[in-house]
Length: 326
Image (tube, rainbow, N blue to C red; front, side):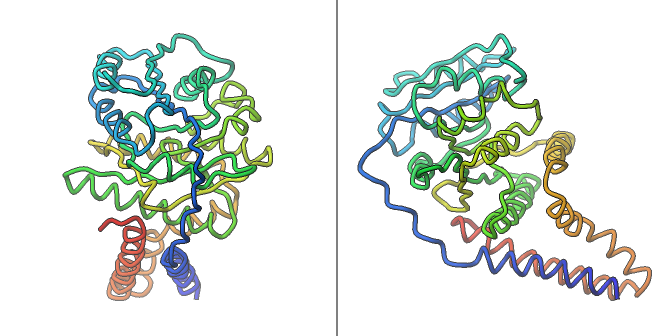
């Protein structure tokens, strides 16, 4: 009986998710004629291998470069990050600056400290935040700006891990499925988090929190900022759309992947109890399946596993189609 209830709940979770994500996309709001000035904030430490790719994507943005301010925070790099960045942005007709980060502001540390200092220098009313290992789409700025409005503090897009090897592509599959579940919860009216490598935050909302220097230190600084913005009454938009889909470089080793996931688990610890329970339900599948194999035999367990693979295949297909990928 308990096994039946567990697996009914597990498959119902995926079925509801596939139904919610499979609905027809709502048309993006019509952007007015005015094009505001924007600031792109990037924190980088020892990113000489990735930063040129990131900045090349920014140079291709479908937005007037004279309205774009790109600020790169060089956080104590011991390689040629700054030089590679300067070379990549040579002759850029917008504004580009490399700022060497040498001190901490308030309680901010690490990436949060870099962003805190970049925000103090930024001159626009909209901060776009991305990472050095991200390549944003050409429609990124317009795609996020379209969903801003009165009292909307944060608009966040999504990322897809890409790479030539199967290990890299499996990371992309796993990550997009996870983001699909986050989108489902968001669509059902429960705020979860913001995507710190693909995010717009208004100056008004950022200032209301006191900035990163006023927030408690966290290795998931985007989640900490998201909570602070929400606590001050600002709205949010979480977008699962092709025009705001950025591509992330993969983790190249298992050690790097496990380190990344351990950091993400710190953020999970701060989620509401009901959501942690849902994640526990979702993540305990193989433990329960092993128990089922002992109690009911391997044939029954194998059938349930096959059903799981099929259901996740359906959800994966829905997620990738929604963002225009296979």
